[in-house]
Amino acid sequence: MRIAMVSEHASPLAALGGVDAGGQNVHVAALASELARAGHTVTVYTRRDDPALAERVEMLPGVHVVHVPAGPARALPKDELLPYMRPFGRWLAREWATTGAPDVVHSHFWMSGLAVRVAARIVPVPHVHTYHALGSVKRRHQGAADTSPPSRVALETRLGQAVDLVVATCRDEVAELAAVGVTGRVRVVPCGVDVQHFAPQAPAGPPDVVAQAFLADLGPRAAGTAHRLLCIGRLVARKGVATVVEALPGLPTAELVVAGGPPAEALDADPEATRLRHLARRLGVADRVRFLGSVAHSHMPAVIRSADVVVATPWYEPFGIVPLEAAACGRPVVGSAVGGLLDSVDDGVTGVLVPPRDPAALAAALAPLLADPARRHRYGAAARRRALTRYGWDRVAASTEAAYETVRQPAMREATA
Image 1 (cartoon, rainbow, N blue to C red):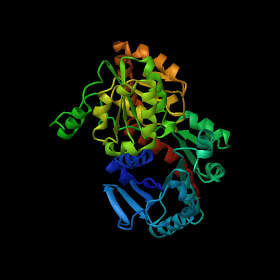
Image 2 (cartoon, rainbow, N blue to C red):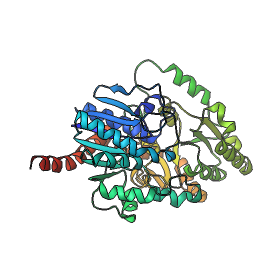
Image 3 (spheres, helix red, strand yellow):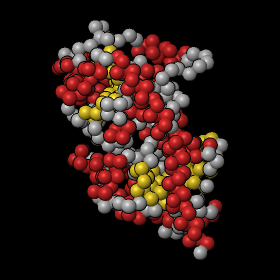
Image 4 (cartoon, rainbow, N blue to C red):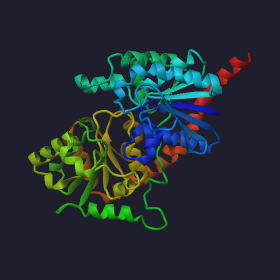
């Protein structure tokens, strides 16, 4: 197939650089790469945010990234991009009218979907859409702090009713879509994880000197502690790191390592890091909380393997890549019973699910797990097996390809009728 992906704010090229890449960048890069390995040709369209970028870049054999001129050629917050989706879509229509329409278009994030709908009115194409996050959920949890355009929820609903197929990433998203009126043409295909990079053992071959130096800097566990808890992610309140800090007084044998946020040298200026440090001092656990700042993608598996338990307690989570990375590394996860974690954490088999924003429940789940190394090992081994059978990118790409075929075949029949 000739596959077009549209990812208006999240370039897959950023995923290769690592530091600025979020979950959508990684997802688009990995999915495009795996589809190309399966023999398809993939073109990813993303907004030009730097005048120095070439219009077309070969990411790897079979995958090209096209930088679409839509809006100013500079970085903008994604919540400010809505006015540029119409010109983005018109540019796509001109491109496809010239080069030929792709066999299927897969848009990522709601604004990308709107751009494709503009294009599809001019050049009809089978259209698959993945939201990655829903405005209705964000508004429910963030309230007045939500910076999304006011029209987002209504536009997302209309988009879901217009596309040929919605690919949701978890069962909870299906329920959320139904609540806003998007039903029927929805199929679940989860996010994936690189099960070779994230693995229970370091890869064979020459040692990674840089990674070893990083781990040496991480050092031994805090004095008087026997266990390491690890939180990974951006430093924003909704990720729930404060819940883990608040649970620490009830976990006297544990230290908490927090990986993510700005570079280590910029942590002192980060408002969320400052808030969490104040909280730790007030609770008397500051000596057991360490902030690493941003961690390179190449170092992350070793950091995960250094932990006894990975803790992911967001208030809400559209899917969540961290539980998959932990599972692939053979580490149990204690996480919030929300969103994608309801699928990615098998409660009582690969980890434990707890209510969000409940430090007492979190401590009650962690204490017996930390005291039982055999149970941790059993959960970790089961998590690795589950990652291999459900979440490897080869499995995810095959399921995505099958989803494409469901919309491509009707379009082919109509074209030949």
